[in-house]
Every structure is written in C-alpha cells, then in structure tokens.
Image 1: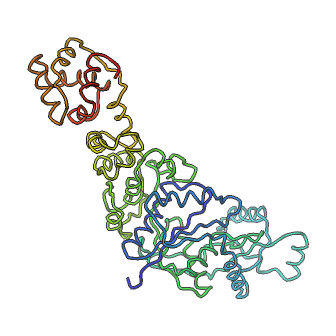
Image 2 (image 1 turned 180 degrees about the horizontal axis):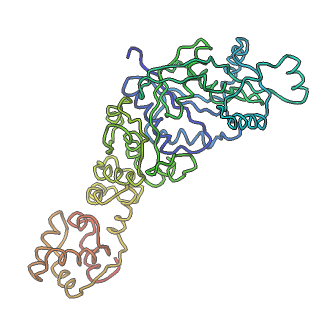
Image 3 (image 1 turned 135 degrees about the horizontal axis):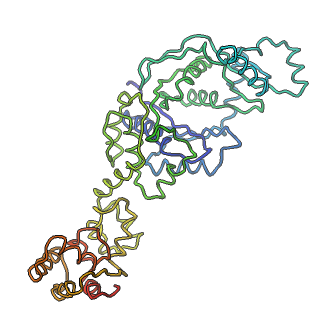
Length: 449
C-alpha cells in the first residue's frame, strides 16, 4: 500500500448505534490503525425528519466509549452547497434527469412488470417527455425527482473482502438521487463527500454491494478517483435475524449502561465471522493486528449475545487494579483497601459493577445463615486474634478441622454462609481479612453485621 489510507464511518443519526453498527465502525478504525491511516466520522443527516441532535451526540459518545476517536468529522447537513453543485454538473451532462411519476404510479407499473414476468426496473419513460410534457406536469403541481442515468454495463472491482466482484448495471433501475422536495438521498452526498475528502477505502456491509456498481459510475461521472471497496459480512443474531436500531437491548448505549466493557464489545463485533477465534482482546493495537479484511468469512457473522457475558467476565478477571481503581472509588470502596479488595473479588465478577455487591458483603450489613449453631459456636471460639492477613483463613480452618473433624464442604460451607450469607463467592482467604475480626465474630454469633 503506497499512500496512507483515509477511511470513513458514515452513520445516519436516526437511532442509537447497535453492535451491528459497531462492526463497520471498528473495521474502518482498525484498518486505519493497522495501515497508519486516518479515520473520518461523517454524519449522514440529510434525512431531515428522522435525524436528531440526540442521536448525533449519541454516535459520538458511543464511538468514544469504544475507543474510536475520529481524526476528521463533519455533518452532511453543513455541505449542501457541494451537493447542489454536483447535481448541477450531472444535469448539464445529461446524467441526471427529471421524473414526474408519483409513488402510486410507479408501484402500479412495477406490479404490471412483475405480472408479465419482467424485472421491476424503471423503464426510463421520463426520458421521452418533451418540454411541453414537463411544463404540463408542473402546471398540475407536480415537482420532479431526479434519477441518475446509468450506463448499462458491468462494473467490476477487486473487493478487499470478497475478491473479484461485479454488478451488472443493466439490471438496475436508474437510482433517484434527488427527491421531489429537493432533498438528497444517500447516494449523491456520499460520493461527493468521499471524492471531496479523498477517502481511499470504503469499508462497509455486504448489503451495499449493489450500491457500489452505481457509485463507481457516479465517481466517474463527476471525474473523481474511485476508491477501493470492501464489503464485510453482517452481524446477525444466532438464529440469523438481521440487526436494526429497533433492537434496543443491543444498542451500544444499553450495553454500556449494563456494565459491559468496551473491549468485550469490540472483540465480539470484530472477531465474530472472521478466521480468528472470538476471544477478549483488551488492546486496540492488538485487535488491529488480528483484523485482516481478507480473512473475513463470506457467510453471515452469527453471534450469540450471551457470548458477550463470557468475554466480559474474562476481561474483568484479568483487569489490573489501575484500570478498575476509579470505578471502585465510585462504588464506595475506600482507597486504602481498594487494591486488596479488587484482587480478592475480581475472579468472581462478570462486570465491574458487581464489585459493589461484594463490598456490601465485606462492609455489611449481612444477615448470617447459621445451619449448625454448635459448629459455628466452636468456630467462633477458635477465631484467631487480629489483625487478619492472607494466612488467617487457612490457620483458622485448620484449627476448626482439627477440633470438629469437619472437612471439605462440611467445613467450608457453614463458615461461608455465616460470614457472607451466601453459598458462593470469592475465596475467603482474600475476603476474611477485609471483613475483619470484629465483623466476622459478630456474624458467627448470629448478629447482623
């Protein structure tokens, strides 16, 4: 690769991003990172009715949470003059032509074509209109929408993911680029922006393959260099259902609020459907080295949302204290014991936020569960003097075992229930020093402490 690439992620701010949107965002950002390039965030907000400031802000927030920081940023709503100029050039060249059919008329025509066994392709009837025909239609109150006149030829390219690819544009309808109200559909602004900003690589979902045939012709009609294209497989649910912004539980905002680590979401979004095994990758640099577009599968990238829990837990179990420190402080864990506490509990956490539950177990109040009062009373009498340290638990349980003959689960479970009120949890060798002798003795005596 000669020049450093410029890639882009171009969401429409019409809803919250979900994990399926994270895939192209990350594939582009990681491609730029891997090849020493730049990443552009472009908000495709030409849909005036559905685009909102809230969704636009959410896009930036979600990407920042994922660790994706754009080198460049702009909104299409600020660049209308560029699109107007491009449309004027296409009209002057005879490549953008006015059409006056209503949606109802187009739908009737489509049904007739299907009924005759013909492909439902626009028949270019508007090209036969005379000036007087157009004047009469406009006198009726009709305003034209504008279609791009495609060359009926095969457009071929070497796809970064799919290899040799092509689209036969003779099988396509001339696409509408400008609505009757003068607003632009996706295609023209996208090509104008890619050309004007010098985007070198367009990496997006395979649902855009057909669009590429049209857009290559549009780049050429505007006299602009044609970028390289790569069309990756799409994330689907485990049963093959496509993702959409309507699946709120998989929105990046919801995943963040539920306490998932961004590295877990990144790993799942990128590695699913690739030649690499899905595993937690904490570093963006490491993830970039694992992300090779040529190694993406052609099959849909099916993922199970529950897999995210496993990835998240593995990241938390390996998380260094320095990374968790501020969040532990926010959960109320005192600074002076927070590292000891973190090392004691992290192996039992699926999410960092769950540390709050174990801080409550340490700090109380806890309602002890005492199933054998005589056994617990004897254990209380054998409780070592403080202060407690990392060897206290073993010394204590050895003494209780020698005095009672209890061993294994019969030894450890009653003590865990009395000290924590729970059947499972972190190793008590690490937890007992945090509970301390005073609280431990109160709980062994059946007091809520």
